Length: 98
Ligand SMILES: [Zn+2]
Ligand SMILES: [Zn+2]
Image (cartoon, rainbow, N blue to C red; front, side, top):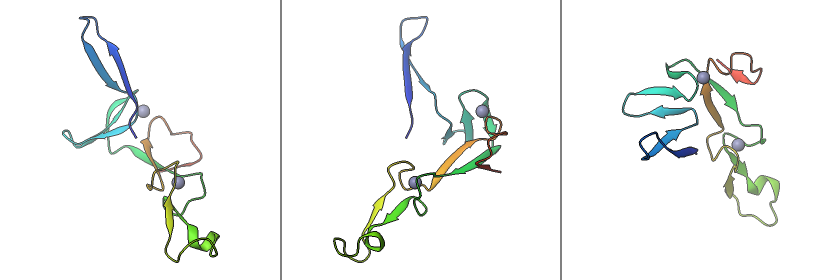
């Protein structure tokens, strides 16, 4: 999910600034709000919510209430299983995998 930071620029027009690390599809590169274009200098942080690659197996946890195969999406990583983060920003992050 992207966080959009909308403010007025010096001309009084709406300027939209993306304040979260994201992939720019046009430029095919990762953009850090702090470091700008970081190319493929990224790291991966696994979701801390205890999900299995972004999902919970509802049936395994509650076979009485749930049908086999019932799963629910992790509300933290939204089914991603983790987050792609800026390599520069997370160089000292022990949870980041490079
Ligand atoms: Zn998760
Ligand atoms: Zn960065």
